[in-house]
Length: 396
Ligand code: PHB
Image 1 (cartoon, helix red, strand yellow):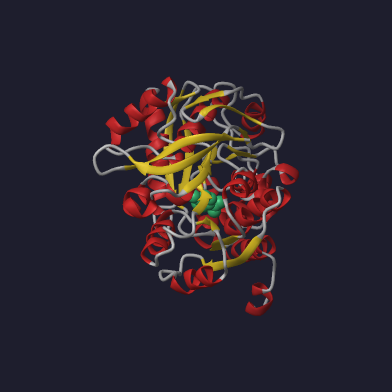
Image 2: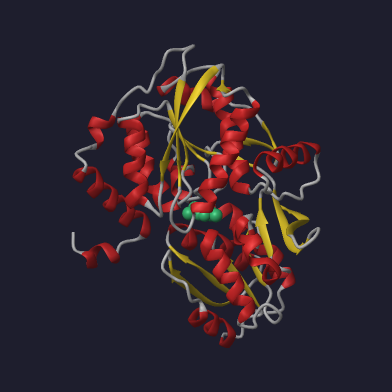
């Protein structure tokens, strides 16, 4: 296939084509992937943890490792009565690295299940591989709309969020608060496109008007000034943005340095101001409002206990990424008590009841997604020179 033909494809189709290419190059056709993934019922189990340890989302991957490990440490290194051997693999910045890393976990390391996956493009590239391999994949971040719902598989479950849902939760609030049209901007890949589409859908349905829409090259943009100039001249009265990790740091800092923070309120999904990104943004992020299913500031006994344990273990505050991975370990704990691999483990996931999470209680819905509360958050000064995402409301 020519590069031109590849560029003109829709993101999901382009990822599928890319993955077919990777599978062909690595000699792993779909039909040869099938395996049971079964293990001895009382023996140790191997779990693959596939998270970015490099690239713009490396910090997110580290948080997920920490969250997963905290759950294991709190449960004597066992899940469902099995001693767990965690095999970690680097997802990198997308499917080019993430897909072969997942294949290695399944085909060479023979893990019973894989947890992790941050990037939507990687998740889209992995859905069919896990479906055909008959090894459960627990997606602990990537929000790609097309791996659950209508395209759900017995082998693919998501403990995090769907892009359309976390972004769509914010639309009606921005209609109420913004004094005019809103500019939409995101990283140019599957998640950015879906976040904008999800926000636009509920925002326009509630009467909102769009001032403009732009996508910055993912993983390559360091200077956001050309984009910020367009926002300034667009007449926008507010901005909705999707960025995460290192890109969120650059975007939010430059938004303030360019003089927009005081003039055009900035909204986004909570990834924009989460954890290490917020610490690096500091004062530049004050006032940014976001939708997310977690905040360290949730005032519940379960979250207070979790924040204390996580902070003690890692000398930093937890993040949504850590919670999603922690909850994924909790899901595996329940399912592995019933079955240790293959179709039986996947079927056990169907029966996993509510998870008593630091984010609040949640369960899998019929789409294989987390059915959960979304919160409206606002960045405010915390104690000392820290900044926090204060919870200012519930979103439906
Ligand atoms: C995604 O690619 O789905 C994604 C990545 C990072 C986030 C959220 C979503 O923080």
